[in-house]
Amino acid sequence: MTAPEPLLLALAGEPQALAQALEAAWSQGRVVALAGPGEQTRLAEALRQDGVVAALGRALEPGSPAVLLGSGGSSGARRWCLQPLAHLQASAAASSRWLEGLDLDPAACVHLNPLPLHHVSGLLPLLRARHGGAPLRWLAPALLRDPGALAEAMPLQPGRPAVLSLVPTQLARLLDEPTAVAWLRSCAVIWVGGAALPQALAQRARAEHLPLAPCYGATETAAMVCALPPQRFLAGEPGCGPPLDDVDLRLAAADGAVEVRSPRLALGWLESGGLRPLPLTAAGWWRSGDAGQIGPAGLELLGRLDGALSSGGETVFPEQLEARLQSEARAQGLPLAAVLLLGVEEPPWGQRLVALVRAEAGADSASLLESLQALVAAWPPAERPRRWWSCPELAVSAQGKWQRGHWRKWLGGLVVEGAG
Image 1 (cartoon, rainbow, N blue to C red):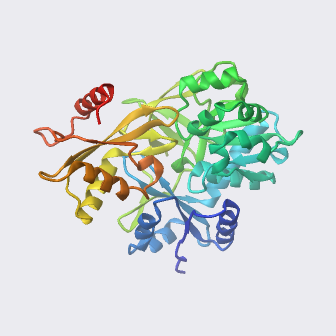
Image 2 (image 1 turned 180 degrees about the horizontal axis):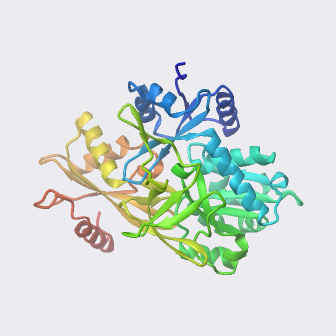
Image 3 (image 1 turned 60 degrees about the vertical axis):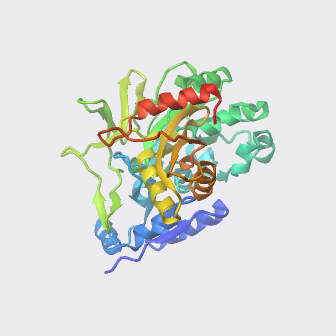
């Protein structure tokens, strides 16, 4: 029997309506592709390639619902990851058991979600609420931008523990508003993932006695695979805690890469009109792109191994974006000779992209920078450079490679001098 074509949901609209459409498609055994802002065209093109529908049909049991979600993967490229609904449900069940380990009844909780559905960390609160028969409350992005209004718009009910999912950028913004801090303090659990929790932010949260539970996971692992209980976080323990009960963790001997084994690993990624299976060892281990160490408190992340940047909870790959910008600039006839994207530290985002640009000989650099900014205006926020600098001497090395360290020093000197 031929598998039905995937349903592409572009995530513009009320999350309640999108969740209803998603669950309706799942009830029909559909594969739903979730496109975030600026990603709809790329995902639609991937789905139109010959062989994709047949490949999905071969990978899934007949009538098995699933999702396709954007992921950074582990090799430095944006991918579309296939996760069966059953794997997401298994993840929700594991996190429910984790809550029970804290003496919290999952059915008595309320799940609060300010994260978008095209993120696995924004999709799982829906599954967790459904698994436990608990209510789900969506937090509008405007509330996170106006944290002073949060407590009034979303009052928490005494006797119903609130479980909240955040990325560090959101947490930092809320910590700047006293009424939002008091509201956070009344939550039972605040899962913080999507990027490493900066030490300074963790210290601020401890000083405010916030029940944070730093966690770690990926689209390929159906979200959270380990989490540090709030009591241990408040006691000063570092890291992301021990693995959940359906997960094994280890570190690669060669480079300390975090490796995961679990029955809820993704089936693979869309690639060249087919589905590339997740690369696993013979014993079923999947290698992430993160370096870590495992101590008494569990997993501690040390950073990315593949050169990726973490910006506002998003994984960003500068080389991929440079190639895309060059291609789109050529298509528009823009005189772009060279572009280099660098990550600079910018709390609370983590790192933000800065673009160094060399115009073609004789072209107006200022006009080019304006055109490039307009060109990327519809890109996802984490992929849009925060600042743009004209750099007439920008060039690769004699070996044809970017000496990123050299250009970071150049950029640092430019910023210190206040030039632009």
